[in-house]
Length: 186
Image (cartoon, rainbow, N blue to C red; front, side, top):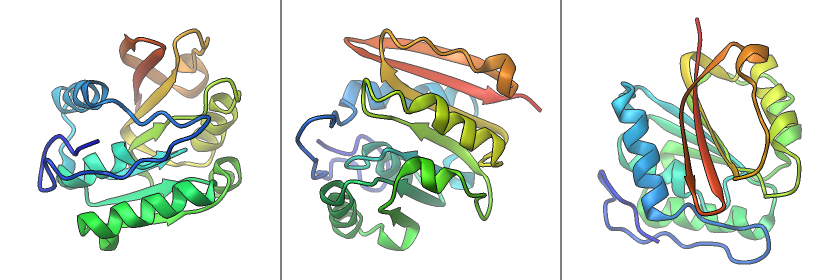
């Protein structure tokens, strides 16, 4: 898998294999980042949070495009090691932090400062999106006018719009993967 755009364009990311891991395909990442940029995301002003990060393809893509900082949350030791290797190989270790911990445990705390873009990509069938979203929204993780991205299985029923004052901006389906992008209403 390669970084699509920015300073690290064309560089290869190591990936994690095994049950529950599905690195974001190039066309999905390209579409997602185009959607964000079309909605006014300026990467040089973005702190990015990658929850259930896996190999970190979304967070590293954001850093390559100029994001100020990225935090990666991943509890699997093998995946966290892959994140560390990718950060070092791309020369991005100084602009990111890797939290080898349970996403619900980390998001139950308050962040030091909010994030402009948050990506939540839980393992399919694990029913982790809703409790993670609850923690993120109640804990002040999302900046005003921030974006929330969900990469979930196609059939998952979610509608957090009214409950968390979010507005659905885009929804796309790629095979079994569904991408949703919300913006926080202020």
